[in-house]
Image (cartoon, rainbow, N blue to C red; front, side):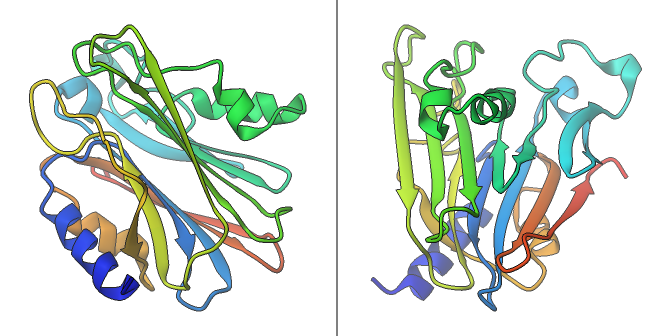
Length: 238
């Protein structure tokens, strides 16, 4: 496989995707020294768009931009980013906390998520997508989980887990909640796919994702040698 061409083709497809929903990228910086996690949220309703990312001591939470306009916080207010020791978690919902608490109690990534399923937002039944990087894993595996509705009727959950041992510097694996726009929204139905990483991932991905729907985006880097992390955030409401 020509990873450069494949990743660039995927990047262009993401650029042209009006509504991929919420997305996660996990990969390796161009210099090979830092692991990278990217997460973005999109929204179409006033309630979904009324959000910002806020960093708290290495964690990131979503928060209402205007408290007076907040309606139902159940699926839109959560911690998308947490860490425990050398495990770095990113997700599109409160299952971040599920993995975090599971790790604290000796459970693994997959076992922790076995207690959860897709979001109860019929008719979309949005998949819960989760990623994790564990620095104690000397191969720096990239873990992904997708919990999605099997038949589109809300009755059964399909649990799919991916684990990648490595990736070429300057590339990441990408997943998101939807294949694109629609009614109901079509669930993401692929493997994690390759995308390029850049010197400035925050601005690059902010500029290529659909401006009408993009709400917030964050980039977290983890220095492989030192474990030092850095989080950069960009919100539409700034």
